[in-house]
Every structure is written in structure tokens, then in C-alpha cells.
Image (cartoon, rainbow, N blue to C red; front, side, top):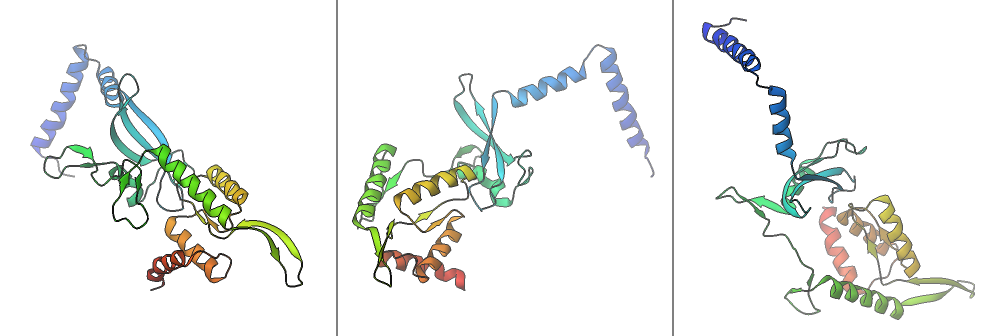
Length: 243
């Protein structure tokens, strides 16, 4: 390797300057430690699960908080090195989860809340073409009312067999459950127990598109009898994936 005179002077000059700083009493290690402390000051790491595919990769969200612990700004999202599934890695979708909440303005380059992010529950009444903002209490009460109404009006207590005898089944055939890839094992267990307590039979705990496909197969196998409008919706969603 050929070293030019200019390169030699740069290296020797930088080395001499470093020794001079140490001799004059400058502590470079303390300076580096102070810089590191400043970089992570008021930054809180929070482990979470990626909401996309069914792999359930672990992510760590870094956010800046004030002295009282209140959220100030989202800083970054990285793969969780302590997670046994992905061991710190993240695909392009998982690595871009930062943009679910915040983006950078194309003109100014400043960080801002993603304008496409839904921040409040939205409700669209039957037959309406407009979404209405509702609070969480109203939304959860509405969901509970519709579940109870549907279950009570379509609950099957007994089913007749081919020989004419009856058995107790205690189920409803008008409700299905689709989970999400962000659910961990414990959450899936609790959700499945609740659905079975309600008498719900068709359940899927994979990602949304796979869950719809699985429910569609259950419909074709006559294991689930939804209303016709739900059957049509399932067929429309399923059709593109069949090519």
C-alpha cells in the first residue's frame, strides 16, 4: 500500500494532537460519556410487538419524555435484540412502523404527526356514507350491545341429530372472530376463551387477510352460516387472492 506525504502528515498530526490534549488535562473518555448521556437523556425504550404479519417480531420504540414522564416525541423504532423470534432484525414493513404515527414533512424536513393516522374511534351508521367521531366509552358500549343482540337473536341451544335425538350445543352462527398478528399467546388465549363462552365457533388468530380466507373456507364447508351480506363480502375479499 502506497502512502502519500499528505496522508502521512494527516495521520501523524491527528495522533500528536490527541496526545497533546491528554497531556494538557483533557479527559476524552469523560467527554465521550457526557455525549452519550446527552444523546439518551429523557429517552424511554418500550418493547412491543410488530402489528403486521403473523411472525410476531419484537420491536423497541424509543420516545422522548419530559421530566414528568409525559410523551414528547417519537424518536425511532428498532428490532428488539432480546426477542427470541427476530433477535433484533426487522423487515422493511416493521422497520417503517415509525411512519404509522409520524412522518417527515417533504418541504421542511420537520417531524410531524402522520395526517393519515386515525386518532379517534370512527363510527359509520348503517346506510350512511359519513364517519362520525365517537369516544371510547360509546364505542365499547355499542360493540357490546350489538354482540349481545346478535347472540340472543340467533342462539342455538339444542341441535337435532339424524336419529331424531337432540343434543345441547349452545352456540351462535352469526358471529365470527378475527384476531390480529399483534396479539401474543396470552391475549389469544383470553380472546378464544371469551368467544367460546359466547358460543362463537369460527375463530382465526392470524393476520387479517389470512383470517378472512380461513373464515371463507369455513363458510364453504358449511361450518359457519353468516348472513348473506357477510358471505358476499367474504367472497369479494377472497377472490383476488385466488388469481
